[in-house]
Length: 71
View 1 (tube, rainbow, N blue to C red):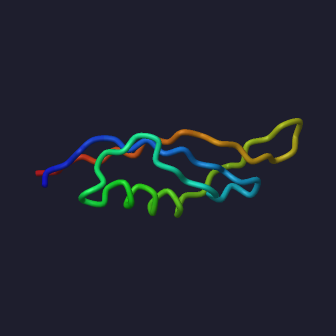
View 2 (cartoon, rainbow, N blue to C red):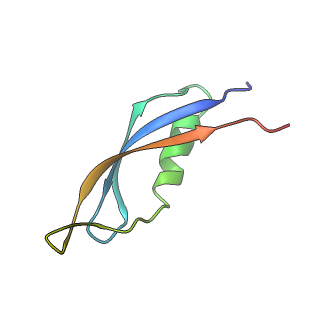
């Protein structure tokens, strides 16, 4: 299908740095599964937890997943 572009995800990074809730904010495609692939990939990531006053806290961040075609 030669679809390429960006999927924007809204992601909750939990106190331990793992990924919680993931939602698609801006879809690239619903037909070929790239949105689902972006969500699945994001669930495998880990982050350094955010801190407030020296204590780890959960935060919601926006992450862009870029899909590009290679020759």
